[in-house]
Length: 282
Image (tube, rainbow, N blue to C red; front, top):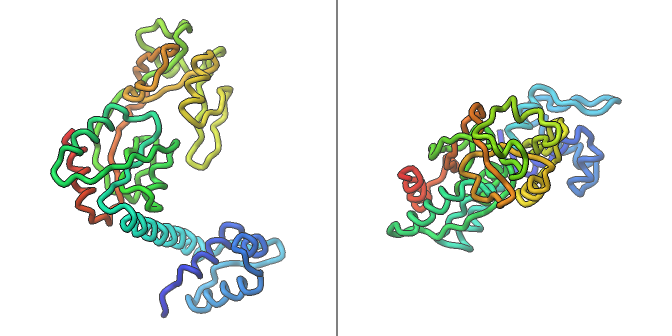
């Protein structure tokens, strides 16, 4: 049996995501009849039914579910390979390290300073990103390594080394009564009528329910806290971005946060290996 082509996988994944041939064809920029024929040819070649077609629409079979998951991973890997190849040609001996904006300030500074002093150290470009974006940047090849945080960031499929485990603090307006406390608990901050917890987006882009404001970036969050509209619980090391209008109070029973350096398991980069060695020594 011939190997699957990326073109075929892209066709199938698009149809599987849309569950509608017309919408899939529009998304792919092609007519519907050749798309339908391509999927039928794929099913004949594999000897399985991938899609169930009826008047109500299209549904995936068990085999189709498997190919959807495998196809997405294959397409991501192909895109990542192309991105890394282009970057290698364009930048030479350079590494891209993805870091969530506002996080790991002290650790990042130490890592870059110590690694820069190593013999044959590569140039390191720090790619600042939003919440939960580090794994995607690793998967699609735009980053060689990333600083990620458990229990927040998914690290399945990556190699990783633990660097730091720390407690969390509540960041509140400096003039709020909670700012005078020496410590807080999750129960005490979970239901403060005049200071609801900020709501960060989940990995799928949706927000959890609650009365707090929706936030997407650090500057927006800092402004809302200073205005007395919200508070947030963050790792202790992230307090570097706090304003004079903020106060950080330890939260004694908040989950511990572990910072790791993660990278694709297939990497053979000597420069990356050196960066990881440096990070683990810190």
